Image (cartoon, rainbow, N blue to C red; front, side, top):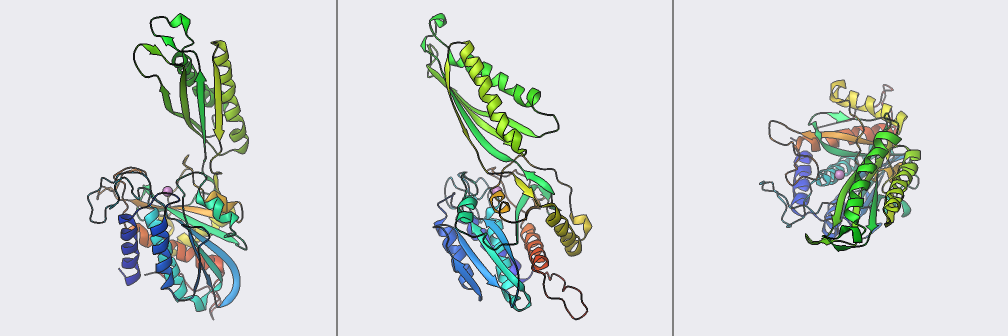
Length: 397
Ligand code: NI
């Protein structure tokens, strides 16, 4: 392991010990800025209170490549027994953003050292608040971090994929994670006299059942859609029928038309059932992030980069996920690809899913993620041709 690889692991472990949740990443942003300050040649800015952007101008003009890392942790209490475990009760890097941050710090270090070879500029985006809608990406785009950018790349260390493998999905890759809530307004009363009430629990149960039919009977089976009802809250005790019941959940889509029509169909069902039983309702729908859609031509180019850098057997076929990601905000401004870098190690028990209190990474994935981003950035910069007319190889440790 070279010196930079061990520093990347140290950075990741430092961040892991000191996690901060979305929009509160003050110590994290300061650590990133302090680390970047020690790298010669970077122009560092702080677009918002808890985000950091660094720009590296190559020796020659050329395209601008943006590389994004998200930096926030989750409100989860860590259950791992490791020496770098979280020191903050109830807060944990349970999604791997500590690793993303460390990788992009490593990338800035390595590319700054090769500045003389670079044609173009690299913008390193350390983005706050990926985990909490409306997210940090949109805010940073509004602050201009994508101005003049030709390509944007990012990655997620991915526990479903074994370490050593990389997944590149062309086209739709992650869903739009929208949310809804619905309050059913009945009329409460004595549980022994239900005929004198309008029971919001009985009505709510029918609503939950009927909403299952939106996906199973109103959506083309070849179009991926999820409707999950994740909250059903009503009542206080055994002998009172409550006035109201609260339902909420998430709607996941890729297709823009379905994203528009599915909530309309859901509300129509809620309206019909509540009206049939003499109740009323309040409906809210909140759009979340846009779907992550990887640019096809850029994906193909990065497939070649991975093949050259690691060999074709590193690429693993991966299906889209119904999870959401605000990397999509950057993709509205420039062609972008969000990659999935394997972080799973069965033999070491590193198999827990993202957002689990025992989530952890095989740290070899940090090294692979760094090599991938370095090779991809150099390729996109159109690194100067050497004397033989071939591009210099993407160097790796
Ligand atoms: Ni994540």
